[in-house]
Length: 94
Image (cartoon, one colour):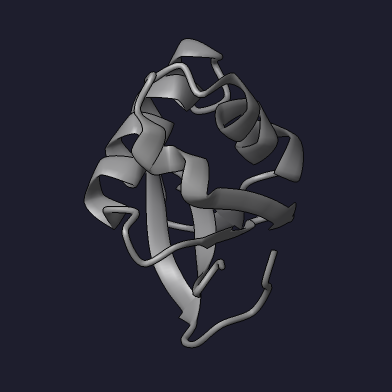
C-alpha cells in the first residue's frame, strides 16, 4: 500500500519551484539505479507527484533522486530537488 503522496519539485536558481515531469520521476523509479529495495515502494503518478510507502526514507529518496536527475542532466548546477509530503493518508492500494 502506498500511504504517502509526495510532491517532487525542481528548485531553480531563483528559488522557484517547478513540478518535475513524470518522465523524470518514472526514469528514477524504473531504473532503480540505487539497487536499494527500499525504493521499490514508490509509484510515479503525475507531474510532480509520487506515492510512497511509510518505510521509504524521504531524505534518502531526495538525495538519490537528485543524484539521478543530475546524472541525466535534468537539473542544472545551482538547482536542487525538493520532496515534500503533498497530502497525508492512504491514496492507492495494490
